[in-house]
Length: 371
Image 1: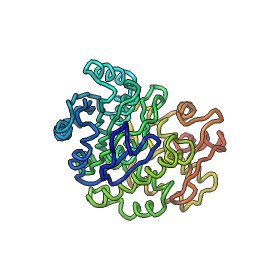
Image 2 (image 1 turned 135 degrees about the vertical axis):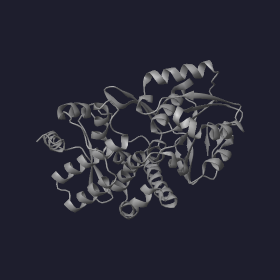
Image 3 (image 1 turned 90 degrees about the vertical axis):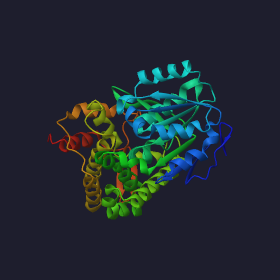
Image 4 (image 1 turned 180 degrees about the vertical axis):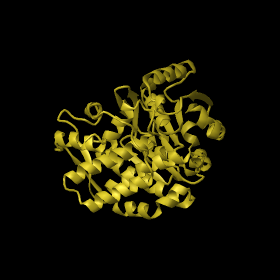
């Protein structure tokens, strides 16, 4: 298999096959050094644009740059700000201009080192630069390893809606070293694990039950437990993306919790909540909707308890009508209205397009403590 005519079978732990080739995915504790050596043919003799943030660069940039320079023709550093503010049109334009001035070509490679925002920005910049160049994801947060790095979604935010500008383009490779997670604050770990709960809740009963048993060890940073849980979450996402790369059917399940979650992030100016925390509240609200539509209360309680064990922060005072307006602009909305991903059993979710707007509104008011 090839990507842009280059070999990509490097002995990776996971492989995501897609319509343009295959994306090897290296995962595990301490895997980065060996993975970057194995991936040398991807950037051999080429210009590599290394995109990261100042904070991540200080922690991991020197080692990654040294590994790239062992084979690349040259390495050009690019910088993005920390956090969601990186995902702006202005930053994308700035990076394209810097890459042109630096002599970027159609066979250049962009390597994105950082959390989900850097990966989303880097993937989009690479997808559009000179009509598309190869890029490699090096996710350094738990959320990015299980979600943003896998599946080819790239995107930028607008003030009106999150991820409302983007493209589908698969990375040439992903390297997810769980040792990098040891530099993260506990809040980031807990927020990232909400995406793992999301995957398990709608796709895999056995995985959900494993999380119920092992969540404390994963949060505490026990290396084997954490690496195994992350790799299982990644494998589940690979299975879904291979079956539905452009989110037309099965992949829509991975939006569990994201409809309200994205609205919360945008309404709060991408400031007060981490993405995983917003998704946690979105899952709790979706469970509330499902319970109102007949979900077994025992199933609802188990999901609520697992989300709650990760301690999402309380929501500030919010206006229900403003959130409803933002949800109507969600990128997943259709002309027919919103489709809701709701749990149907432990480890099984479904897409529901017939949720009454009156129920959405009344349950949101109760959820926000307004009724």
